[in-house]
Length: 184
Image (tube, rainbow, N blue to C red; front, side, top):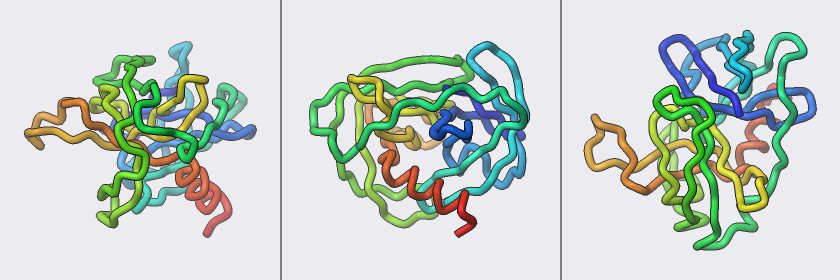
């Protein structure tokens, strides 16, 4: 897990492939062409934004140099069931490496993310707050099953967690990332 800073925007991300590329949310990087990635050690490294899919709220970063950590193991959101345990990992409010736990509330919840089109998401009650965006949602075996992307809140201005969070299923995110990398 890494922290991602793109201009005034801040979020989370994680390495998803053997080339050290990082998945995060498109709304974390906005229109930026480069970002700063903060590794677990605290080291700050430059990254290029390879592209974004705003409809799925996915972006891909590539770290300059040999500094990227190893890829996290991938699972499948399709294998989740309601009431399965999950962990949300990220940097909420800049608190790097924060882990919260919860359960899966729904596996194919239709929500509007990024570009406004309806898409499926994993719904969880793990506490997700500003800065968790782009971080991994992992199953009980430690495999990534989604990218934390949005929360429901009673007051749009406050943005605090009320126990309803959404993650892009990892299969959808990796498919979008592959399209970005291939230039599609």
